[in-house]
Image (cartoon, rainbow, N blue to C red; front, top):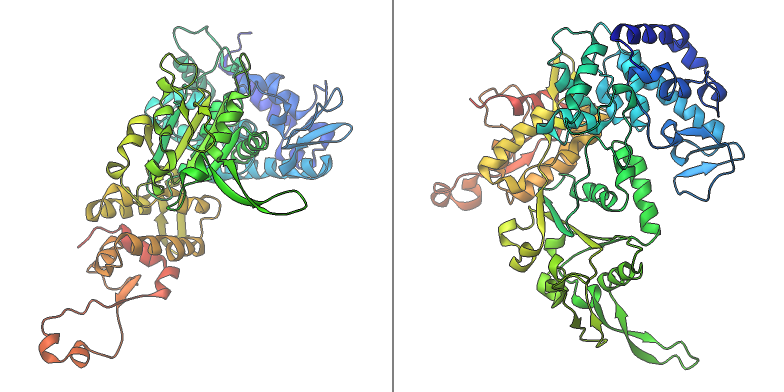
Amino acid sequence: MDVTAAQREQILADFLNEWPQAALQEMTLERYIGVGDKSTLAYWMEFGDGRFLGSIKGGDASKFGIYERKAPAKGARGFISSDERYSWKNKYGATAQEAFETIKARILMTVEAVREGNLTFIQALDFEPALKWKLAFIYQDHNNPCVLPIYKLQALQALLPEHRALNHLQGYHELLKNRNGKPLIQYGLELWKESASEESQEQSLDDIIVTDEDRPVSAPEQPLNQILFGAPGTGKTWHSVNLALAILDPDFLAEHASDRGLLKARFDEWVAKGCIDFVTFHQSFSYEDFVEGIRAGVSEDSRGQLEYRIEDGIFKKACQRAQSTGAGAFQPQVLIVDEINRGNISRIFGELITLIEPSKRLGQSEALTVTLPYSKTRFGVPDNLYIIGTMNTADRSLAGLDIALRRRFTFTEMLPQPQLLDNVTIHEGDISVNVGSLLRTLNQRIDVLLDRDRCLGHAWFMPLCAEPTLDNLAFTFRNQVLPLLQEYFFEDWQRINWVLNGQHSDKSAPRFLVPSTEDSSLEKLFGKEVASELSDRRWQINASAFSRIESYQLILREAE
């Protein structure tokens, strides 16, 4: 159906006339969603005239948080609860009515936030991504728009290939820079046409559906062995959840890419099924823990004598589960190794370091097997076992990593992303501090004084997206930033002070670090002759500075 931009504008006006904010406040569960009821909000949004304001088709009805079923619930799903009539996501409540009240409250939060232009709140809100952004588009101030009628994150990323890691908020911000006064809906239609591949079948903005056959951004094939490396707080372990789902459940990941709560629940389901194992390497971790070893135990018979048994380690168990799927029933198995660089790789992997190579996996033309030293059984690594490692570069640089490991893994650097915080600003009186700029400035100074491996990750600051208060910023600096700087600089307080711009000529702003106020002078401590050869390097933390916004503003000022 060919619908003009002007007709879409009228559809929007008619909807707002029927569903003003007051109608949302009075909305009941039956008015929100129902099987075959074309008068509900959910039907209008997905299948009714609302589809001409940007599609949210695809996936299942759980995109609305709750749905009425035509038939009894199909088996148990870890993140879904059901009664005789409805099914809903557990995170919203224990009953259907309780879940609906939570969903309704978040709908109203979204509408209120977009009317205030607060997209940062909407981005951080734990609510259905496609639904909340479509609501934001509809209820925004259309004289000063901030949301486009494109709700699939992959479509936004396809339009901005140089920013593939962006979120909805950033995508809308970047794309609206080039609107040049065009009518919003018309501009949205043009963007969608621009994003469509010349080779793909032409598709309208009204019919964007993520399916196996036609995905806006296809999921790349995952390497069998990969390591995420970067400074602390850059989201390595956090991102390993997404990588595991990209291997085991790519469609679900694509559909719910911006709903972290739902992704983690799905991840936990796969863990419960035995398809994901998680282990952390440390200095005392060994081959016997990872592959197999002899363990002492008490016999199960009545004598209760001490005996020694060969026990399989986590890696061998994961390989066995991967092989047990059998021919024609390919089921990937994922092993996540956190802090992979903290273990002694040759001691942990032993002879198996060769077998994890893709070309040496079982089923490949160059497949290899070895005889394990304890059980004396032949062993190989199946080609459906995926190993995801994380590596903190503050502990050990990539250059110092075991060369055998480096040759067998692909590496993805996880950099600090201050741009995720560019829309977060702390206000106190007449002074404002942008958190993205704050993190960016701190890391630029650390990079010069140390290196990029020991920068500050954005994860420490992400809670500020939901609650951008001075108290929360102070908590982050006091408990995470300053201790990390002490570790990085081995308590070289002068250099830490440089990172915080404490040497600035403006002495009116409180400093985080100040010279020690102890009465004992160097002469009293060492005598005049020795004191003349020393410089007083004693510093102390100024606790009052953490609660003063001027202290953070000082970090952003150019050095003088």
